[in-house]
Amino acid sequence: MKTNLLQQLQGELQALADPERASGMRAYMRDQFDYLGIPTPARRAAIRPLLKPLKGSGSAQLIGLANELWERPEREYQYAALDLLNMHSKELGFADIPALLSLVQRKSWWDSVDALATIIGDVLQGQHDYMDEALAHDNFWMRRIALLHQLGWRGKTDHVRLYSYCIALAHEKEFFIQKAIGWALRDYARHAPDDVRQFTQQNKSVLSALSYREANKHL
Image 1 (tube, rainbow, N blue to C red):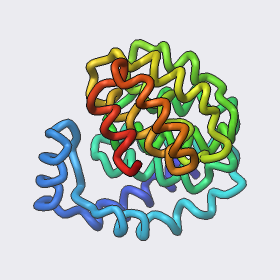
Image 2: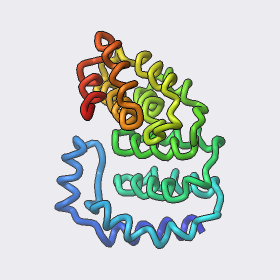
Image 3: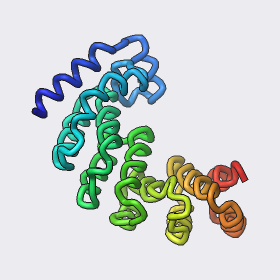
């Protein structure tokens, strides 16, 4: 079944390939990945009918298919894996987090990592399993996951954990970490603007200029 589905997915995506668009997409991603050249709406419309029937198939099959897609060279296959996992995130559980974190560390860039942060956050649903370990990981994309996994949690956000994670990584010079700190704080500020304003003011000397600016962007 998996082999047949992979062939069907490949057929749908290959039929939409646009080499001219692919060149621009590759350049936008700093030539790190090959592309078929398919816009997101067209990709999702083409593969949704194939992915939707997988509801109820179980997390093992979902993770297995995602891993198969992840190994394909063109970036749209990783996007298809993310579409799959996002569509059926309710079927994933805490036991699947290590497999998701494995994807974080392969073919890593902000597009796949940020999508996985959302999926992992949906699976955790207010819990924080594996996130302390991710925060201390030597792969900075894993640390970015730890910072971003609470995005959209609003009142369920563990603000003590959020703030401690931000302070723990505030010294880092990595752009994607500094940006993630600001993004995570800005997101929580939609729920608790005064609290975030106070935190950033008290820690202005610790936070990078980028993190501080991003956190206060809408305050």
